Image 1 (cartoon, rainbow, N blue to C red):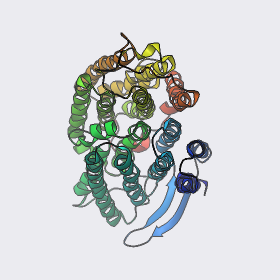
Image 2: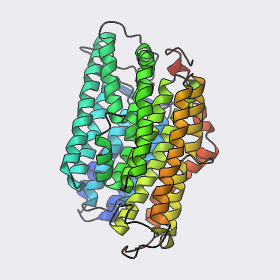
Image 3: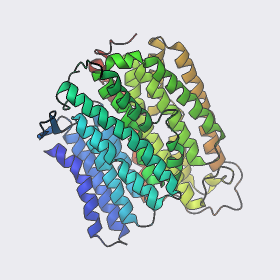
Image 4: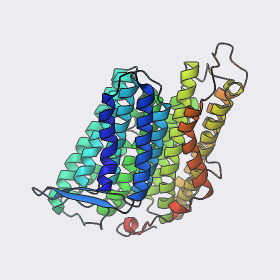
Length: 469
């Protein structure tokens, strides 16, 4: 029952926020932050607990079944930390409504990553679109961006739902996530795989289904996009590991070359695009396309070392991308611009903000001692060991390019001559710093000691896939 409380708590709290006075910002932030902390505590104490209740018996068995897997537990912790930071960093109009949306978003993603039933997973997949869509409609500057985000992701979600229904009819149940693999046979298997795969590629996103992403990341308020980029973007990768590798291993292997190619294109295209962006948020957006492309390559290499590296990097990317978007949000609030052409010399007046962004940037470019390094290193070693030396070499090229565009981003904003036309407002307050510090501390702790993540048991995911090459 505690697992069910974990899933429902943010949604109930988000609804109850509307009982507060509309202009009570402090109470909204306090309650929201406490709820996010409560989800972290509950996740720790319910790691091995499950909740299950009968939901459907026809045309196939489906249960309200929640419980963490060895992968999703880490993502749930990441979600709690990212949501806590996003709520504390919120500084928009109609704060109460915005924080309520953040809590609804957290609840839908908790449902997704804790779902042990595939139909429940698919429904939460669509539910988590709604808070982001409403956030873009009410706080974004371009309604077309909201509709592009919704259409792309809803189309992917519809394919996921259809594939789930076909899966249930083929197997007789959708209560399968986290269990032993069920062999799918029959003429519908390729179509089921296609439905899952396209949905996962859109959500990640991966080239060429990525075009919704740069616009969404640039137009969404920084606190919400820190959660979307940090956690929601991992849903597709989680799906490939938890669903694809366990239940559709032969299809995963048959099309591994295609997905590795798409991952490499995303890896290089995202890196090159980041180099030429003048919008700071778009630099980080395209860098995410590049980083997530590398994770996709690692997954489809079917190598245990690469898979462990992928899990570490999923968590690391979530931490540093959330920190980067929060930091860039603070810059935009103070200087009223994200343009790298206009920004410069901010470090002199903003030492705390500069330090926070520096750590996040160093983690993103893979500095040893921070979590990103361990994940990148293991992925590249595993990809090479799996027989994809060319992909590992191109991955190294992207790592070098990451150093170039992230240093360009940081140096251009924080160092150099002070721009006389910039307001140079106050440095981070203690509350603003508190939003970012847990993300940075987690990067440091997992960078120094990634062992808790390296103990991840890859056997259930690779045995049915034939293991590594």
